[in-house]
Image (cartoon, rainbow, N blue to C red; front, side, top):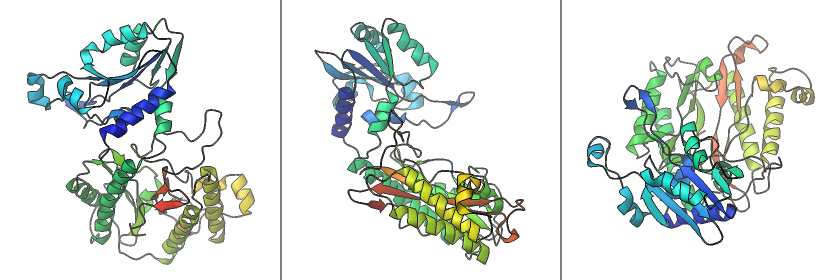
Length: 415
């Protein structure tokens, strides 16, 4: 659990990064309509949650900085017994003042009044440039005389790159739950079952352990379906002799896990499957060994490409010089994605990979990223030896950068 003191320190850090005589605004997420009067499950905006841990919609944070003051104001929905009858209790202004270590708390209905007063004394407005138009319209109405608008999102996202010890503990908890789910599915008798039956086992174990949400839509792809990278239909029968690519992870208290394992329906790999599996696994293990502070993600990607391309040439999947195949990017037909991504409050954590001037950000202690090489060979690809067609394999783990090296947070999930 993340303490209110930690959230307060994050807000202080953000205020220090804002210019003097400026106002910053970060909005909560909003409910999204599924159909007619039903809604999708609510999920808080990640940047907003990172700064306060508040889980309600219809709320906002305002940051005010000038020569005299530097403060944070939280706006929350008011208490309304009639609405609470239908939609549940609200914290309200009174309790929010006690719970959150902000300087002031007001009702969200007063936001525009405070915006006007604060922006009258400001030169610069910070807000998320991806904000929906209705909110941007409100902000610009009161900021029309300002000389500068700045995007606040990249500032927060860069802060999110380095995980605190409490964030790491939540990620570890998510991975522990995901481990139980993967192992349960591995141990199932899969003969005669359907992909969706495995998905339901994941969902049951996630929720049973207090992870009320998937970190992303689970992928359970049997046979050639694994060669569609974002396959989410999950509705085909499991066929003996085929492999199942399972990319599934839960979200625990807003923090993600992201795990892929490739297993056999029958429990045993045939020789072609084993050859491809070992190539992907050995590539992953070699790349993970390279991880340490100051290493570059681009070097991890480069090494993965070298190892996979070399292996595919040995197996007759690609033909020619390894160097030329890499230069011409021929490997991309069978390995089209990157080696991994940041992970945290979002499964694909919306954090920068490069500095403002375009220079790559080096790995640092406290970062968490995935390492996920793969090979995908469509069943109709006649340029590849027949025995490899229709096989798709990916293996993915979640890696923490430590002071001197790395920790594979998901090493206990069998592969």
